[in-house]
Image (cartoon, rainbow, N blue to C red; front, side, top):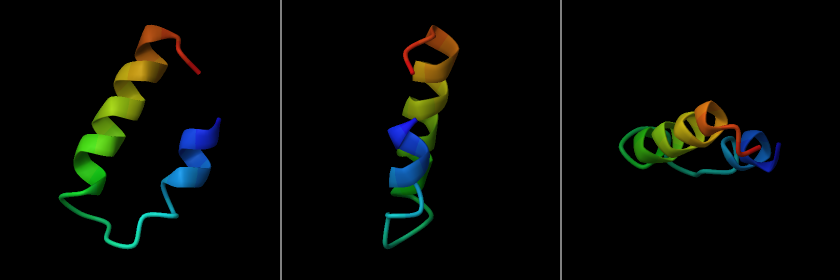
Length: 33
């Protein structure tokens, strides 16, 4: 899961992390690890 390592790498957690988290959640739900 590289997405988990990229999450804390983001410098600004907020509006920039929201779409990323949504995309990651969608990918995980789709079964695309």
